Length: 128
Image 1 (cartoon, rainbow, N blue to C red):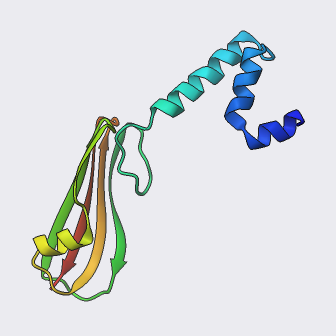
Image 2: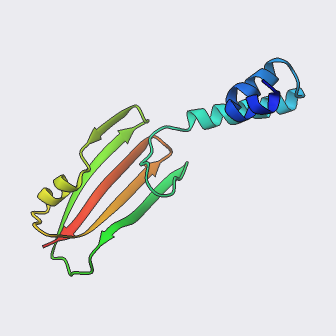
C-alpha cells in the first residue's frame, strides 16, 4: 500500500503514523495534535440541526409550511447536558398533542446551545 492510498483510506491513522515517526517538525506535530484533540472533544451537547455554533446557538428552522392560518401552537422539547445525558421527546406527535391540534399547518425546529454544556431542541407545530 502506498502512502497516498493509505492517506485516502485512513486519514487519522496516516497523521498519527507521521507524528510517531517524526516526519513533521515539533511545532507542526503540536498543532496537529491540538486540532485533533479539539475536534474530537468538541462533540458535547448539540442540537444536531441547522448551523452549529460551537459557543452559542439560538435559531428557528422551518421544516414544513402550508400557508394556512394557524390558531393553535404545540411545543415538545428534548434537552442534552454536556452531551452525556439526553432527555425528552421532541416528536411532532407530542407537540401536536400538547397544542391540541388536529390539522398541522406548519412544523418548525427551535435549537439552543450554550458552550456545549446545555442544548435544547424543540419541535413547534402550528395548526387548527
